[in-house]
Image 1 (cartoon, rainbow, N blue to C red):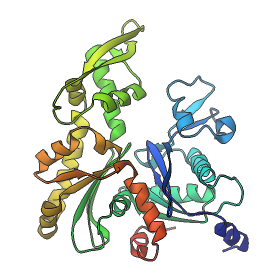
Image 2 (image 1 turned 60 degrees about the horizontal axis):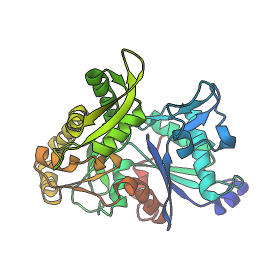
Image 3 (image 1 turned 120 degrees about the vertical axis):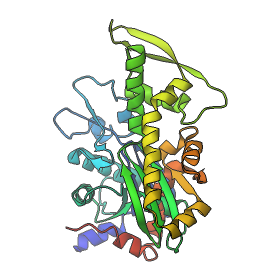
Length: 351
C-alpha cells in the first residue's frame, strides 16, 4: 500500500453500506446506522454532474422524482440490486462517504458493501470498481442474507439452519444459512418496486387513471396488505384521466390494493417454497423449529408474515427494525473482521 493511502486510511472511518435499489443505509462500527437515504441522484442531462454543488442526492433528489423538468435528470442508479449507471453510483457513494466523514479531503476508508446473493461476478466487480473510484482503499462484499442474519443476531456459524427472507426495493432474497454460509437461496427480482408497479397497472386498467410511482408507493404504505385486514379501509387517490388527460381523483379500497399486489406476493411465496424444497431434510427440521425471519422494507407490508405462514406452515416473524438489519450486519462485520473472516473470504471477487 502506498504510504499516503495508509496515512489517509488511518484518518478515515471504516464504513458498512447496504447499497439498495430503493434506499442506501450507512453503518459505522460502534455507532450503528448513521444515515439512511433514497438511492437517487439528480444530475444535468447527459452528464454525471450532481446538482446543488454535489448535494442533490438521497432525500433531496427523491423530492424531485417524477417532478423534474427536462433540464434535470433524476436517476435511480441501481436496478434490481445491480448497478445500472456506474458514474452516478460512484457519485452517490462519494457523497455518502463524504457526508459521514463531514469532509471531502483525505478519505480512504475500508468499505463492506452488502449485495444481492444472485448477482454475477461481473456485477460484483462493478460494485468494487465504483467503490474504489469513490475513494475506498479496500472493498469487501457480503451477501445481503448473510449480513441480515448477522445484523439480527442469528448464530449462522453453528451447524443449525436459519432462513432469511429479505424483501427490499429491487430484489427479494430468500436463503437458508448454516455453518457460516448459504446452503441454498433464491434471488428474485420482484420486491417493493414491483409492488408499486402492480398498483400503477391496476389503477390504469380498472380506473382509466394514470398515477406516478411515488403515489403508488404511498398507496402501498397506507392501505396495502397481503392478508385480509381486521378492518378494511379506503384512500383518496389523485392522478390523470387516461381518456380526457385531465386531473382526476377517486377512492381505492384496501381489498383492491391487496388484489393488485397478489402477483408480486405470490412470486415471493413461491420463492420461499422453492428454497424449502431444495433444503435437505436435516436442515428442514431445523427450519420447522426456528421458522423464518423477515427483514427489509417489504417485510412491513401488512399481513405478509401471516400470508407466508399460511402458505408454508412455518412460523414467521419480522425482525426487530427490519429496515436496518442488513446495514447493522455490515457494521458488526467491521467490528469483528477476525471473527467473520471466513464469511468475507467466501465473498471474494475474482479480478
